[in-house]
Length: 186
Image 1: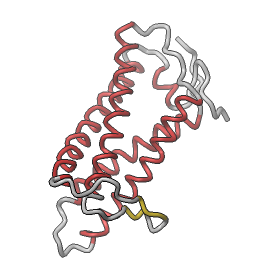
Image 2: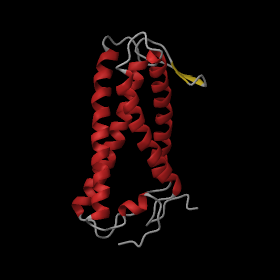
Image 3: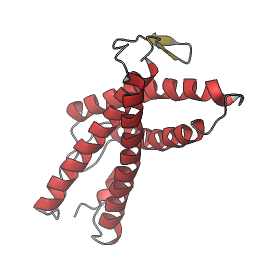
Image 4: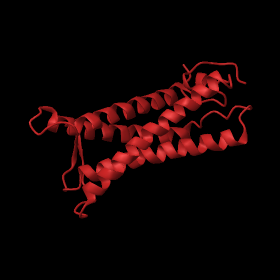
């Protein structure tokens, strides 16, 4: 089992972190869309936001680990067939995805703690409210949270389409590397 990244392959930890975050983003997006349709008398009216907040804190922890892992085990080098535009686009896309995801998490925190209440994470621990009472904090953070969530979904779809383009049109090993295969490096 290859844990750390090599110059040509992603290790299993990077792959696991990538796919856990990807699935969590889509799951949280779906949960968020469903959550706002609930009526006050629905049994999930209070449970869904508590679940959403707890999962958000867990995703934050995974994202911090993922970011640290990029420094501990740098990603593989770009393939030789990548143009300069592809290399720059990939770096910008990854930076943007990280920025948007952390923005979603930060805005979610600001929504959840606007009234001064901590976030209870599955009853395991509480995340204290640090910045509260800023007037329309929850409303402003809510708008930012919504737009960043949509941006994350759209950007991640483009990210996936780019991987498919590399696989089916360019016929290189970009996608295979992200699934942990030991491809012939082109």
